Length: 232
Image (cartoon, rainbow, N blue to C red; front, side, top):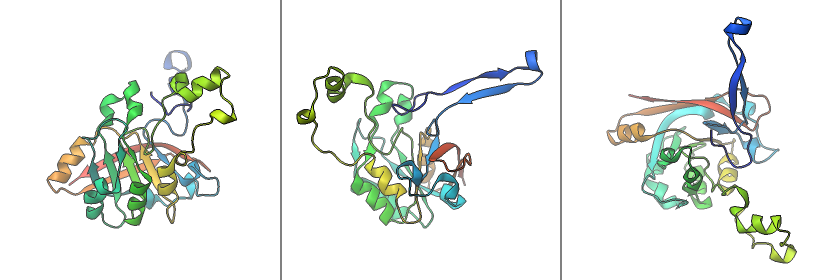
């Protein structure tokens, strides 16, 4: 399973089997941010709410979708591009960002997904939305892993010093910090699968509700979630 660069790899293997122990038990090794998962505010700031400190209402609600499938790799999603979706949002809505990136699942291109600009994240919060889901690895840009990055290569070669430091960039995980830091605490769900049926339902003006309930891990930054949508 692809994971964010640096996160623990996922391993699922038999621990016990009926042939040897009379029961089947699976050994599960994964990080809290593996697969379809939710982020709690604690993910980016230790003073913000942990997963078990958030109300259940943060993980369910009526859904509104933003169709971003026409965007190219590593596109920066602006507030203007989200405006039609935000105009349809009702109190307690869950905003789903449909990038179409699940088609690249399992390939290097999956890391080159579109991402929110800080301005877009601020517009989401201003619209009263506290729960955002995306069918990609992150709402922020995902770096390419390994030494292919010139700065990483220079460090590995022992060539970089304080004078070679790259210019200051936007704060790391800027969209995460804005969405999760919203008043009352926000929630982000990442690695959703194909949202096409929901886009089609929205085009037919069918009501959509979603549930993104995670494992209730104590004092956690996030957890895998079973994402379910209901149309009708």
